Every structure is written in structure tokens, then in C-alpha cells.
Image (tube, rainbow, N blue to C red; front, side, top):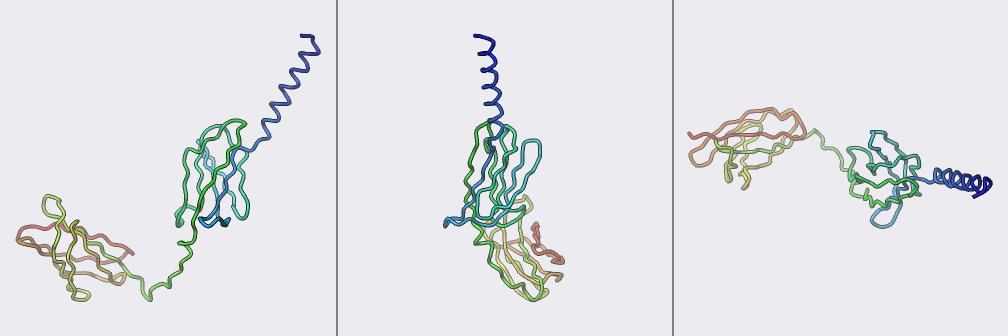
Length: 198
């Protein structure tokens, strides 16, 4: 090959290498189950921890400056309803990738009026001395109001009261008995009770 031929081959290799740098690594297309384009945040996390976030509105979002390792794509903000997380999304040099994600925001748009006073749901978890669940145990609540509950086959029963309320009562089944007293301070309170023989 002549020196001019070598020079031309080098130029072609250089131009093709530069052209490869212009490709976009990842395009994310988000659609709802009925085919609409929702307004939602889309973030991409690379293997080194770098995070890029963009807003998806009516068109695809592009993440062009990624490397060559798989990434994690999140559709919807952290701790939001129906967030979609796709792990190990393949990223390859000079090979654009289109990721299609179905995202359903409709169930998250239901707005319920807040209760006049915050409530606390108590979930009783009743076990015997060996740690086995106790079905059919009678939970007798004496305060704040007299009521009773029966545990299911996994030793559970639910009770709702007002937040900040003190709850007192007793639990009995066969020859076993236990008492309880606690303040229901959070939205959900789990009360674990171990029954002892009378």
C-alpha cells in the first residue's frame, strides 16, 4: 500500500471513530397502559453511582453520555406510588438502546380526605411460649372503649383507634393469658404478645 493509501485508511478509521462518539447510549420511552405519555421523572444510575435525572413529558428522554456498563433506570420519584425500577439495563459501546417502560400513575391520583383526627391501626401478633402463632385467641380491649377481636390462623388481629390513645386489655385462649398496655403513637403499631400458662 502506498503512503497515500495508508493515510486515507487512517483518515477513514479516525472519521468512523469520531462518528461512533455521536451516538446516544440510552433512550427511555414511558407509556401508560392505555398508551398515553405521562409526565414523570426518569433517572439513570450508572455502576459508579452517578445519577442523571430528566423529566418525561410528551416525548422520549435521552441519556447520551453513558459508559459501557449496565445501568439502573427508575421511572417515578423515590418512595412514590407505582415507581418502576429496571435493573441491569444493557449499555454497549456504539449501540443505542431503546428501553420501553409501562408506568401506571392512575391509582396514585386518588385523593382521600384526611380523617378529622389521625388514626392508629394496631396489628396484634399473638404467639405462644415457643413462638408459634396462636389462632382463635380472644383479644379483649377495655380502654379506650370495650371491644373484642379474635386472631386469625396466623395469630393476627387488627384494631383502629385514635393516634396518641392509650390501649389496655387482655388476651386469653385455653389455659393461657396475657395483658397489654401501650400508647398508639404512630400510624401503624404492631403489638407482639406472648401468651403464658395461667
